[in-house]
Image (spheres, rainbow, N blue to C red):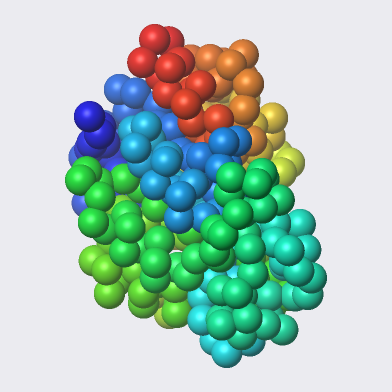
Length: 267
């Protein structure tokens, strides 16, 4: 049976109850879907993660040559398809013609690169609400208005209260907040961020997304005292997961959601 997370229904601090920052159970978010078992960032990977009961899904977005928002991590298609080239150089039809599964194994042949709209459709029709973490890859390659266009799609599927948009490009998040002030954003970062709770407040972000080793227990406490959630990424081993759960980290973003769900149930 699917779990429903009360804390995943909205990311606006103004609308959240006080217990938002002190969840009774750390949430488990599937990084690029159930990516340890299925080809990452594909519809079957997302559906498999939903079926095992994750609290959230993380995915990455780019823009195709003809303007469609597509889901893939890398800027180039080489690593996870049977072709080469940059995403922005290929039309949606060209991207859809690629095989996004065979790199993971012969039994995954035929998997497609999904659009953001296709993922939103899947999640919006699921039988219990989950958090959707959309990571904008606008950075090394700039995709003008990618974040605001993605958010418009989110709103069309009535999922704005269960979606957070993250990025390593903090300037893009700041500019996005100027056009969509009610949207939930979260800065991603690999190394320690001084007073990350104050940084998040200035950005208008209800959460921060640090790498698993980029913070300590005191940072989690300070974030919670300021109403900021902490969602850690790169959490793929049991020892780290147990430590972060003990610290009260709000969500763990992982390639192994099946393993971490077991820890979540039996800390």
